[in-house]
Image (cartoon, rainbow, N blue to C red; front, side):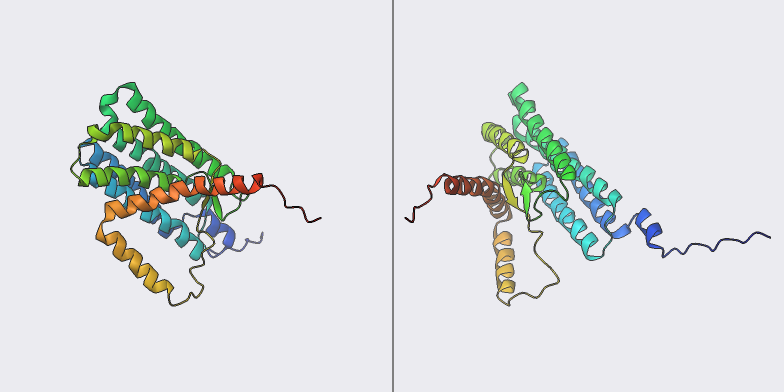
Length: 255
């Protein structure tokens, strides 16, 4: 009688890697839902709700990767799913929101600017996926698509909060969409924050700073968030200018 091979245990690491981990992918699905919800709200004219939904998608997008790393549940499926979710939430959704809100009456110029943003997000995500393990993890190459989406959504949110119709600021929205689309595909360096270790002890003063940050954001969310992400978007240009100036300085002679 032939010997029956032993049954493989479900705890086998090879089998576990082929599975789909529930927790990080639930968070990715929540980010995808928030992006889809933002599109629906923009189509019905609720632009403030659409802008807030983009920021909600950012929160879930930031959590899924960190949860996967902390629980050691990274997978190839999760990485691909996250990229597809990002394309909807931070690529298509912001482009549609800003087009419907401000650039709809600009004719071809409006949809061209929206497409430049959308294409920039797609190219940025594709380049990010192909450069994993090649570039310095401390820095992103080009403006991250969530930050670009937050910049667009923050602008829509703050202008809408001031009761200014989108049509009155359409050229500002046009310039912002082009700026974000071009900056996403640039080679500028942006701090990634991936060198922060959440399991490491920190000085006590870090906690009051975090509390102060929450207070500032809660005091006027649209203005503070837009200002923060505008500074982050400009930081890449500032870093590039500083590096260019240092390279251009002549070396002092010592003889």
